[in-house]
Length: 276
Image (cartoon, rainbow, N blue to C red; front, top):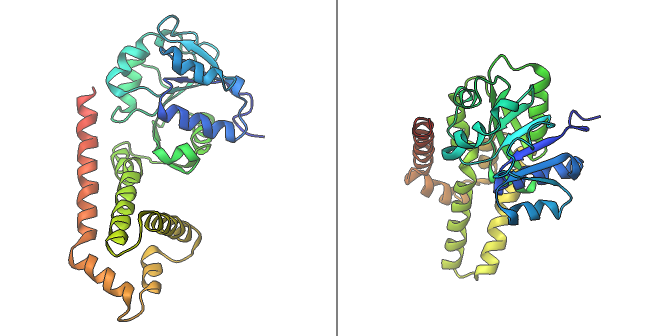
């Protein structure tokens, strides 16, 4: 028996992240008829109706998606969050509210909801679309354990879900998982370009680079060895891998990655101030 059994889940917003999380929930056995999507676009609503989900025209009756829900997922841009939630905050009654909006703290969200306490902040990433996401979660100590378990189940439907006990650490979550798929895509791009420059065609280079990154990630997850130990095991003395790694080290690639993550962290902090 799952904590999600018979739970009614409403999504406020039907964009990419909402679609990703909904795909995960359905893949985990949540019945489409238990999911409601509130969106102003008729085209967006039709996409969900075609999958047997309920929809609400947010521009006509924004409260309709809230009243019978057990979980409300806020999947709208932080810039419009206050306007969107103010239209239904007064009908919240012990529902769990999960926000996937970047930069808005639990205090910000609670304030926008008129002091409502049952708020969880989540930072998912785009691999959630294929149920391979990595999500950071934070809630105040006032949230009861059953609500935390429910939030975990909702987000684990799309991959890994991990709680942090200090909300400021959500900026670090953004740097290491929220934004990080783009770092990996950039690395794969560079590998493909490098292989093409060395004589492979684009199709060959793409297939080999993508499978290598997938295999290395899976091996890292399944191995008892640390990433650094796995790297050392590939590096034969004076061999090809050592030459490549020494080139990266001489160019301080590790430092550059750290600086990129710091830039991401700093921007996340700035956004948290701009969106208040």
